Length: 140
Image (tube, rainbow, N blue to C red; front, side, top):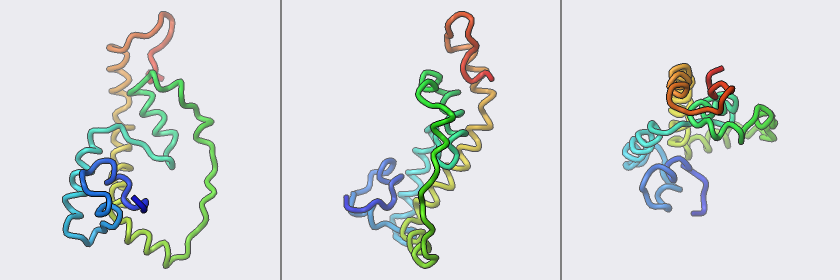
């Protein structure tokens, strides 16, 4: 495709590339596309760059073998993003309304997944083997 609009839909919905690039919340197919995308995302462990530490903790608790590939220092990068003109920002939000809605859903889903971490850690302690002398990952 030529655009970068609606990236979550590109990954989680079965729509055609040309339609995905130009789809906005005003389009007839928007509700169905968003519904499929959110339904599929709800079965994933999610994260966001802005919530790097939360994302890292959630992934490490659920996938302990991945914890060695991530560290707190990997979350320390500063953004070089520049502020957009308000009119430009409004147009970007309009053209990417489905992506904005998906992001808000992922943010709430990450909250729920972080809230479930003690349960995940306790399950992992019972089911994930660890080398002798080491505490199970996610149990801290």
